[in-house]
Image (cartoon, rainbow, N blue to C red):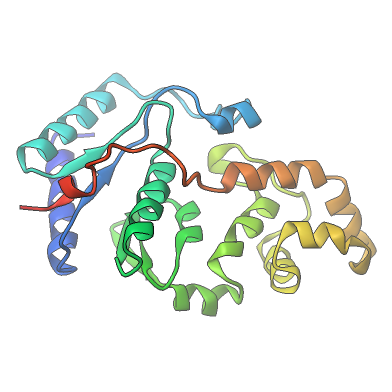
Length: 233
């Protein structure tokens, strides 16, 4: 990463904030250490290389820039950013169900959070794609809540989570459209074609563990005043 990356990050961030006419802004980073997913699956993200020293320095510079521009960021040891985001949203929607959240991310796992008041702005290769609850339902023909079940069948190579061999995106989508959840699939496993049935039976334990791995934690204790600190000035 070049030094200009820091300023590009900040420029994109402020641009998004201004276009959306937002009242608050929070930047969330992964924390180091271990977490419940590594306890469930020791090889979770094990294929990823350690952060290079140069990248670490760049991240620290980004945090410094955020502080200088009065943008609040959140990072907690032993917790992934996705879980912090999910916990932050749940905590504040419990206080005020009318709050609308736009989540800017590259991570597809956060699509499970979509609701009438939560939108996802997925950023890939310099382009931002908006996902609303309605857009997701039209594309997948099942609810965002069941996106966890869909990914549980497919796995996630990026996170080193194995899927069910022989079950691709098309079949996974059809299964979730028909049964809604992986638990329902296994309860009604005898209703499936023999080939699909055997593929799934052989990987039942894996699929159920996958669901725990992919489900975002919403119960992380956060700083009490974090919401109030998110005002952007």
